[in-house]
Length: 628
Image 1: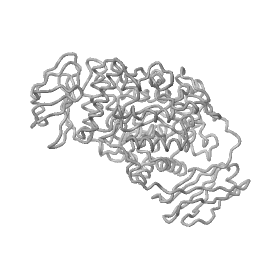
Image 2: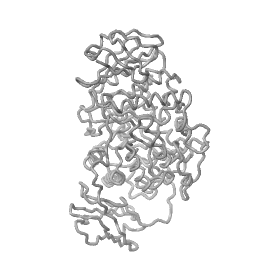
Image 3: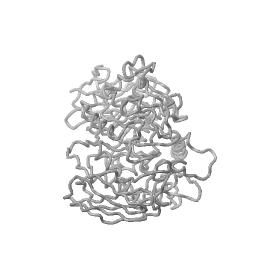
Image 4: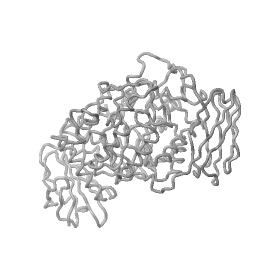
């Protein structure tokens, strides 16, 4: 079977894996968990800023019986109360404010007269005026992706947090919390820099107070709070600031499509139309082809977008304007609070298409430097490109404004090329040939593996020579490369179950018998050194991050492409994917090698004296800086 036919099955496995231990095995209908009973007044967003380009501010007010009355705003220069909306649940009230350009930072005084009287002081803050605070990412960056709970435990005092539904750690369980946190990541900034990484992407950091398998972060229970097992909101602000001071950028992993079933807005829902619901529990059909199938049915599209991702992940109804505004404001809030540099959007295609366009426009309006890239786990180049800015016409009213996507096509192509001795190099060639579909394919994020896929080193049969070929491709192709934690020290396993590819990084906990942060003997050290050498070379040679790419059709198991600048630097990447040395006629590449007479392989330092006849050893990739 080909990948296209397997994709819905793969997507189902992915969804099931994310909360495997928390999914009922026989239930056919979903029963909401009991709500926590005493609660006090809460307003989302928890505070806001003056000077935002969009002056509209929607406050979702939550308090017992608050919706039975009205809201009042004490006079405040530049701020007007435009309207008050009631929803089905009397515990909610929606207050719509206009924060004019003349408004100054300060305290708004709000009053509510529902079943009881409430007074609330709401803070308006000054926006950060540093134009370079949110930097965004470019092709010059190299992203290190990690799972905070599994990377390093820097503060054992937050391992167990009173009041959380999982208040213990168990490192011998793949579904339990292990204790990694923000401090653990920050303790190893020097490690990232030594490796050559320039950006850090942790899986979601916001609260996931779920009773089972909450460590991965994709079942949000509070959109405005860092999970206390990782740290506090203020510690996250300091984390981003410290990363920037060390020359490291921060990507925040976010989920638009679904929340966890213990989210406070699901436990006490403002209205039934805040979440998609069916007569009985209904999963997504996990088939994004329905969105642009010219022969597709409305029912299939509805099941894809409105069905739940998993039994414990209620699907958020983004076609409800109140819900859409709540989500948009939340993700503006995190950028202004922290100065983070990019958003990686989980399960991007599953969200309401019209909402995605509005969300992307709102984010770009306030933060034009912020980088956005989404997860589009699709089986073909065209389907993947559909979810990024592309040259395709709108379909069913959807035209993506997402700058880039995680490049699953590159990951699949590299894995397929290297996993056996007859690997097809043409898949990688075709994955890059399809760049014509994108408005700008350089904004994509190529990778080898991640928290949902088999680890790369296992996919290629733990063959170190093939490992080097894969890393050479990753770090020299177009786009912003991403490395999954542990790949640089040959962590291995298959995602069966998913916890196997989410193991603790050796040395992240006191008393670990192996500490790869400090010493990496044997093959792990050789792997780290290879990645580090090539990644740091990439930093100092813009041709690999900003130059053009020219590829030649693979021949006889050898694939060759060039990164070049007209009249400037030129780097040749040539890979022999066979068991025998290959003699390659270099005159075939004359349009790129003209004017150059020799080269140096940048990792080994070996001289390449003759560009007209190249003898490439078996299972070897060369990254050759051409010399005149």
